[in-house]
Image (cartoon, rainbow, N blue to C red; front, side, top):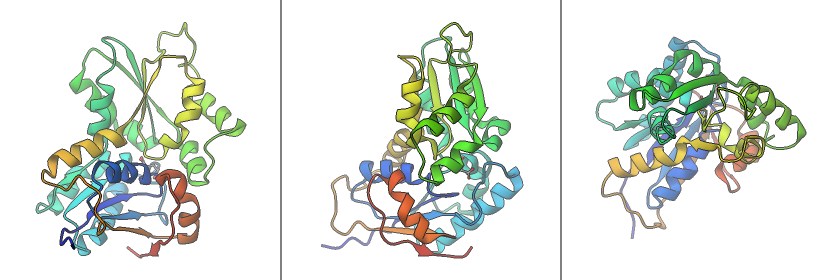
Length: 270
Ligand code: DGL
């Protein structure tokens, strides 16, 4: 039996969005996916909003030309700055971001508690997470910390060990002490590269701290919105992986994010 259902397009600035793809594939095993990592232009997280928006529109264009039936922006920075522009450029397609679903998960924190968002420099300074969480739960105290080094570490396939721990400690400084006023009840992984640090992070955080990852809530939202999608695994469900640079590195390191080996990656130019 063959499926004529077009694939769902997913993009990120690099390989981190494979953590979202992994959750999407688990939630929608009958669907085909095309994933694009804009590795040539990573990081998006230190670029200006206008540049991020332009890059995101170009990345989406390549997926749209391949006939996708929905777009998932698996990059927090692009979700923060380009979601409206993408929806306006492609009114025929459902467009999903990761910030709102992440905020939804964070909004389950205890009343009046502190929430710490770890994200890129641009996501933090743009304030999209802070606004999204506070609009759902004005009683929460939201802090945000830019963690640019974590993106580089993740792209290198470094996600545990002494070096990672000291970088994580550096970023958590001031939020870890049990006495600290800003000791967070929840830590939001506001960057698609960060879920690979979850075990190391959980080991460093005080016991009982919730670590929130938007991949699951995003996948649930996409599944709900694309009602009628087959929920059972389908032999015809396909995955195509595209990257704008370093396809061999992508194949080598991408498995850390996707949770299984990556074999073929197609090189594309935007
Ligand atoms: N994918 C980006 C995000 O989730 C992080 C990497 C980058 O800075 O491009 O914000």
